Amino acid sequence: MALAAAARGTYGARDVVNAPAIRSAIGRRSSARGDPEEVRAWLLNHFYRHVVGNLQAPAPVLQAVTQREQAQALLQPAPVPPWALARLGEAPARHASVPEIPLWWIDPEADAVLALEARLVEFLLSREGTSLQGKLQRVTAPQALALWQEEHAAYEAKAAAGWREHLPEAVALAWQGEQGHFIEFRPDSEHLRAEMAYESQMMRHCLGQFANRRSLAGGYGEHYAKACEEGRLRLFSYRTASQVPHITISAHVREDGRLAIDQIKGKQNRPPVERYQGEVLALLNQLPTCEEAPADALQMGIVRTAQGWCTVRDVVQEEDQVRLVQARPALVRELPAPSPLVQWLVAARDPALLQGLPLAASVATALDTGGGTR
Image (cartoon, rainbow, N blue to C red):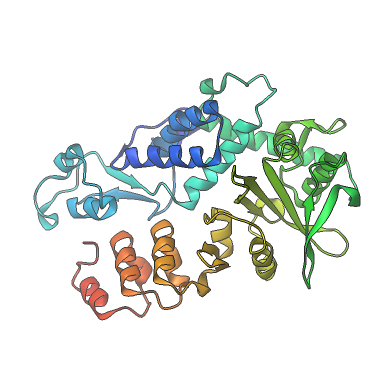
């Protein structure tokens, strides 16, 4: 049902027990980004309906809920909605029967959800000055995703037809390392947009993909360039001595001047090569960043703690470990000696993630006796 609906550009019907939490998370992230009201309204309507009705993802991101105790573990500390309890039955789990119409739970903070949201926000913000400006509510999420894919394919074809050179006056050195260096794009440079086009040409992403390649205006490039020129966005590129880009980092500028790291992209929007992890950490630790770590950072295995940016394997403080697994339970497998509290939190979400790890005696016993999801 969900796949067929998405193919038609519509939304499927699916009963999701934590639907209000999903909508709340979308709204919270939109407010934190400072999205325009039209974009925020679209996300709370279309993106919310797409996640609830159409999202396809493996467990534990998308889980069928068949037992009352399972629902309680997934929703805690919030109670299970009465309508869901009625569907699951009031009997203990061992006596409960699977509901005729399945119930579902979706992780609103999963990488799959955040990646889709980032793609759609990029699409929506780039509509300024186009025929869709002011008409976004008529576009469904599946339609927007299809347009995003179509436009990026067209941009790649255009990039292959032209070539731009690096312009030194458009950038400033931000950090010098042993393998390479980070430059920052200068928002006051008359060559800013040309350098952004060069970055996209080399990296095969949309940062500097302009609808009009001659005038360097319109499209996704317009969105990023305008934000940079107005001081709302800072852009960094990790390059070798020959000025070949390998990593692009974007950061939103908050009202207090701190930076909210938005994207950390390798070539073709893939995660950066692992050998550059140390260079990325070095740059981030010298920038005035907020404590939030984006999904791109977590994919690289780096996080932001109260002490600064570090690799997941270096997160030793229990409060940092707790905050990390609450957002990404799977990262428990990379933590050094996760505490019993951390193990209990993961056991409540997805006990399978603890398989093969050295566990506290109480956690191991609970899992052996089938009580790990309580």
